[in-house]
Every structure is written in C-alpha cells, then in structure tokens.
Length: 246
Ligand SMILES: NC(=O)c1ccc[n+]([C@@H]2O[C@H](COP(=O)([O-])OP(=O)(O)OC[C@H]3O[C@@H](n4cnc5c(N)ncnc54)[C@H](OP(=O)(O)O)[C@@H]3O)[C@@H](O)[C@H]2O)c1
Image 1: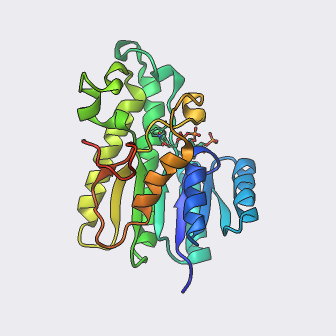
Image 2: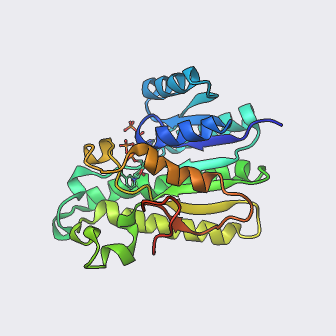
Image 3: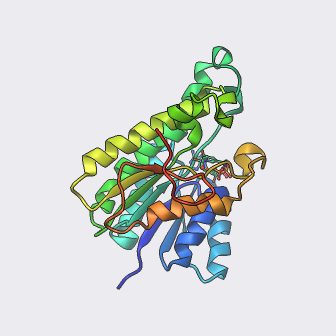
C-alpha cells in the first residue's frame, strides 16, 4: 500500500514541524508547507535524516497563486491528499493591546493568515482530500478562541483581552464546524486542535508546554480512525485529546 500523504502548513518550525515529525514517524509522506524555501528545504532535510519521507512544498497561505500551485504540485506528485493540517498562524504584535487600541490593519493581518488562509488552502486541497479513503483536516486553534474559556473569570485566559489573535481563532472554530457539517457523510473529518500554551517563536518561548506536546494534540486528530469525531475541538490538557468547550 502506498503511504498516506500529509500536508502541514507552516511546518518549518514550532508545532507544525513537530507535527510533521510525528506523522512522518508513522510512515506518512509529509509535505512541509513553508513560505520560505530555505527554511522549508532545511526542515525537510532534517526530517529526511531521521528516515522520514519529507518534502518541501512552497506555500504562503495568504498567496492564492502559491496555494493553487501547491495543490497542482501535490496532484501531480501524489494524486491525492490524506491529511491537511492548517497550522500556519500568526499573532501580530500590533494586535496585542486592548480592543479599543487595536487597528483594523492588525485585525486584517491576523485574519488573512489564521482564517482566510485556512479557507483558501482547504478549498484548494479539498478535491485531493476527497480522493482519500479517510481524509482528515485539522485546524490548529487555540483555547483563546474558545468563548467559554475566555469568558470564564476563573480561567487564566480570562486575563488575556486582546482582539486580533483570539477572535481569529474563534472564527477558525466556526470554520471548522462549517466544513465538518458540509463534509458530514463523506470520509473526511474536520476538527480543531488546541495545542495548549507551548514554547515557540509565536510567544517568544514563554509557553509552559513543549511543541511536541502541542503537536501530539494535532497528531491525534490527524490520525483518527473512522469512528472518531468530526466538528470537535480538543487538546491543551495534561491528558491529550480532552474536549475544549467552544
Ligand atoms: N505556541 C502556542 O502556545 C500556541 C497555542 C495555541 C495555538 N497555537 C497555534 O499553533 C500554530 C503554530 O504556531 P507555533 O506556536 O508553532 O508558532 P511558530 O513557531 O511561530 O510557527 C508558525 C509557523 O507558521 C508559519 N506561517 C506564518 N504565516 C504563514 C503564511 N502566511 N504562510 C505559511 N506559513 C506561515 C511560520 O512560518 P515562518 O517561519 O516563515 O514565519 C511558521 O512556520 C499556529 O496556528 C498558532 O496559532 C500555538
């Protein structure tokens, strides 16, 4: 049997890189989506030295030409896609202040990557995922996107009240639910993973979890068997795979 094909966006570092490593370790061919050819090639080369079939795919999720070209390349090389991990994400520095001090520019910047980029990549890859016997889409969300969590005064996340990043992840959760509903009745499952607060460049390495712990949450949803959930949101707790309230 040919190996399963997984595309991970933003896979040159952080949680995306560790997700590629975990999926590759299971024998999947991992396509390292990266906007920097240099960093993407290096990440693929590193995983190749570990015996993983890793290949760089040039992909800036905000660039529609590159998204279309990536889909064409994957079709030509593999004919289908089994797993799509929408991992690429940003937290614009300009969007970290109080809501009333947040510019629309910062909002647009966050949404371009964290929301519109996910929709663009998903729509481009869906024809290939439909050719898989068990397609899996994992959107890498955040508990900061959970209205139940950020609205709960007893949650540590209640203290964080910026607008750009958290609301983009709330919108991403809505995207997950909408695609899960559209694709219900097909073999494709669509879920949101919460990696938890992991030490990566995104937060200047202030997270208390490792990128591997975060990637493990993504891995679980990317490798769900046919009986697994769709339209779910899970991760971030000590025990992997725990549900997160919306
Ligand atoms: N770390 C956490 O605590 C945490 C918690 C919850 C959710 N998350 C989510 O986890 C995901 C991965 O974040 P991380 O913590 O691993 O951060 P990271 O180390 O900063 O990695 C982010 C990745 O996304 C890529 N990226 C950004 N914009 C892109 C674009 N337009 N096109 C393609 N790739 C792009 C980056 O590429 P470059 O190297 O070129 O910048 C990088 O590879 C994000 O969606 C983030 O929101 C993280």
